[in-house]
Amino acid sequence: MTIVLIAIALYLLAAIALVAGAMRGQHPPGHGWLLPALPAVALHIGYHVMAWRTAGGADLHFFAALSLVGLGMALLALLVGARGRMATLGVVVYPIAAATLAGYAGYGHHLVDEMDMGVQLHAWCALLAYATLAVAALLAIMLWLQERALRRRDFHAWLRVLPPLTELETLLFRTIAAGFVLLTATLLTGVLFVDDLFAQHLVHKTVLSVLSWLVFGALLLGRWRRGWRGAVAVRWTLVAMALLVLAFFGSKAVLELVLQRVG
Image (cartoon, rainbow, N blue to C red; front, side):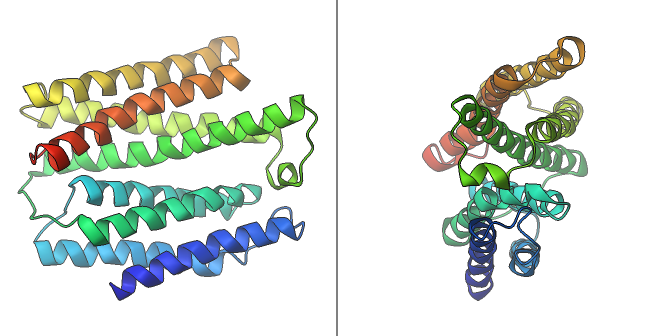
């Protein structure tokens, strides 16, 4: 548990460093937050690797999957934040990563079920897609808050921490596009490699995932053909993400935590 506690402390220190930089008027908030963020992500990865060695394979049950999504979000926030003003994303992402890691360490270890390479590829595509699109959802919320404040002429100090509206919107759609490709790969590998994809306890998961894919696809098409942006982009991003959360973590919570079955 020592490695977990250190990683959680470092995640929180990175978030605090970003907040402190913003309060001091640093825009972008410097790179001091990288010092705790980098080892936090490394320790998060290391903890999963050690847990999998103990279990004899990759644990992808509910809390493990949740922790991996948190790790993916933290890694994306780290990569995006190192480039400039979007480091602010870590204020939300790093505490989320810390919480998911704590959940896995406290409650999430399970015996590993043997999976062939195709099913493992499907699972990893799914986790990467969820992490990427979860970051897109956070960007959408940031975009909504920024637009709302500007409309009301509430020029708070936190607005200066965010990138310009057009830059934030561009990053949102690039993230959605990357997540859409990963979600497409998830659905394709599911069809190809998961034998019981349409078994009774996976029907709702499949249907909700396809609906989310359709909404994200329609949003990207609307952006390309009609220049959708602003409130429309925010609304449909959050709708699609809600469907995806229900598809994966909603079904896994019911199947694994309530019914004690493998989802």
